[in-house]
Length: 432
Image (cartoon, rainbow, N blue to C red):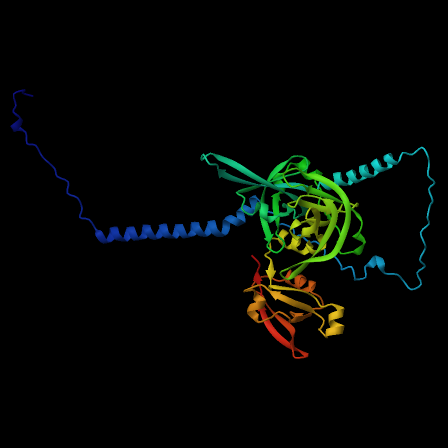
């Protein structure tokens, strides 16, 4: 081909590609279909997550429901116990008395020492039921330096629901804590949290997960054995006091006897029997009183102590706390009416003609009972169609109810020299 051929001898053909016109309707239809599919997919994904995820989670990681905690209530001292029942023809055999002659080769001090060694053995067994509950808070000093403040109280291992341990402790020490630690008898420390509190007694249940405790520790601890503190036989009996008897953070043990029984702390809807001892301790002491069988008969609470002997340890009888412990262990609120009162004594019935029932001495301001119209001086004779013959029955009935439940209450109110029956509807509330 001739190299001199000019470029203009060739005809350059330029081709222009023309785009197809945009179909807006078709595009809009596709966008709507895509958006609809996305919404449908999202709804199906949400449905799967919300409804099916728990199912698959339980299949892959099955969870165990906690067992309900049950603590049997005790009978009252004036009731006939099964052990006290005798057949009419039963022959009572007088116990044989064995006389031990005094020997000259026994040192009286050895006997004294042996007695305290036996007491210490009981304390060692009880120690496995005791824990130290510590409230930890982060504070700032005068120079803006952060530090951890710790305040401890004695705790008692009272129940186990298969998932958590239940520790009974005083609320005032731990209620505002940023974190709670529980130290067991072998030094093991685990994290605890308040499961439920009782504003009436100032006690709480602190729960500790079993999975957070080493197997060796779990095998060595002991659920506290709770005695019947209502029996009169505990009067003048030897007892042990364990816990922070002298305040502070040091656990101690001391011995003495029960010196008083039969006085009460008159609180909302409940009268708690107080047990006095001759054991010296701090006015801020916390811990337990136990008998020689290693059974707890009371929880130390110095708020109810006699001011004239303020350093003598006083405890709330454990029998009056059992239902509260059971309720808190099952994470149920405290239901209340707001009544403070007492039993109608035999003298009041015979000499003044006061009907049998629960005598109302006062009411909590703004309480359900006050709102319903119950007054001081009324005698409650029935709650929820159950006859009331003593004040303690009110607490027993309330433990079975939940807040916002309405119950019929019948009272006798004095009108002149006679008493008239009045009916009320009381809507129960939670005691905060």
